[in-house]
Image (cartoon, rainbow, N blue to C red; front, side, top):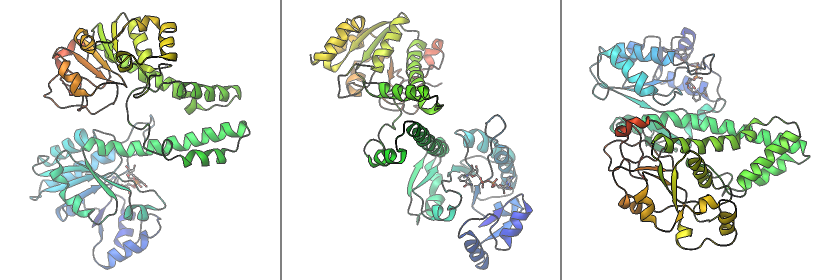
Amino acid sequence: MIGVDVNPIKVEMLGSGHAPVSEPSLNELIAEGRRAGRLHATMDLKLAVSQSEISFLCVGTPSLHNGSLDVSAVKRSCEEIGKALRSKKEFHWIVLRSTVLPGTAKSLAIPTIEAASGKRSDVDFAVCVNPEFMREGCGVADFLNPTVIVLGADDHAHLTPLRELYAESPGQIFETSLGVAEMVKYVCNAFHALKVTFANEIGTLCQQLDVDALAVMKVFMSDTRLNISRAYLTPGFAFGGSCLPKDVRALASSAKQLDLDLPLLRAIMPSNRAHLERAVEAVLATKCKKIGVVGLSFKSGTDDLRESPSVQLIKRLLGEGCQVQIWDEDVSLGRLVGFNRHFIEEEIPHIGVLLSTDLEEVVRRSEVLVVGAKALNEETILAMLRPDQFVIDLRSLGPVAQPPRKWPVTRCYRPSPPPDRRDGLTSGAITGEAVLHE
Ligand SMILES: NC(=O)c1ccc[n+]([C@@H]2O[C@H](COP(=O)([O-])OP(=O)(O)OC[C@H]3O[C@@H](n4cnc5c(N)ncnc54)[C@H](O)[C@@H]3O)[C@@H](O)[C@H]2O)c1
């Protein structure tokens, strides 16, 4: 290990076997490494690159005044590594360990190193992303006993030395793309921040309502099926139904009455609405007017139409002058009874008349097919589609597909590219990876 820093005090400390930061067990580890001759420190990056196979980039990535990420230290160290690589014959790995936004490895690190070294990525060097998940204060323990290890590269063959390096680690290893590796660190930290904020807002509301917040959260945390679980964490369509919107609104309204500022709880319904609006925009961006909707109820396996986001979506499309036809399994099987039949007939009769029992006809007549929560498997739908049709799959916000694809299908309901670029919409299998690109 050769530690490199531009800060001479850190180099001096590491070089003399002392930890430059205060962390339990770190001093002992560094002293031991130094004694055994396995740890060196220098300000000479060229020397370090020439005598090593892998450069781990752990420079700071602080916030700028406007909140954006300052990647100047990443750029500078990539330039320096690139210069050092000019005189190196052997292949070299550069592993981004700093927290950086998706695209940094591809659009900043690789081109900077290529320009400074005159060498080519994948041929002379490889850039990988290996985000750091340890917490300050228990960094050594977290490093030695990680939950997950994320190794990102666009060519997984480049991950061989990292695989070897982490072979003894107990953490679950995920080999993934550069972008996923970069993003996952932010998702973790955003979720942790969200959890703290959620608990604090609930605690504040409980206090004002004279309810024991700790007792509430104890029960809440005991539900590992829906609460502390994987449930509800797959990116897809807006939530709906008879309970979630009603109860979220009631909590937000209760906070308002108590004159409590709880922005997170208040933001849930507007965020859900914005998500629905993105689906509307995606349909409108196709400039097509004949829209088929497959699936009407708010979630698979139920026929509850109250506050169904698909119903809201259809209302918006009708308002924009679209001609909509709807197919729903329950309608086709004649299972729509009781409250829902009444709901359609009384509350949304203008939508009720758009329901069809003939799926093939709905698909055939559509220029855009919107696949809702309750839908058929993709083979059935793909078999009915023509190459000139668009598909907007609301069930899952999958990855962006690479061409070539069989159909001009999109599952991502973002409005780009512009509608006049229909040729730029390459196709994607419905459950496969989606979608819109050059
Ligand atoms: N601190 C943590 O617990 C933690 C946890 C996970 C991820 N991260 C991420 O790791 C990165 C580093 O965080 P940190 O807290 O260690 O930052 P830090 O600012 O404490 O340390 C960064 C070091 O990089 C050095 N440096 C800057 N430019 C350099 C260059 N061109 N060449 C050599 N050295 C250079 C600095 O002198 C400094 O010593 C950040 O992206 C951070 O978000 C940190």
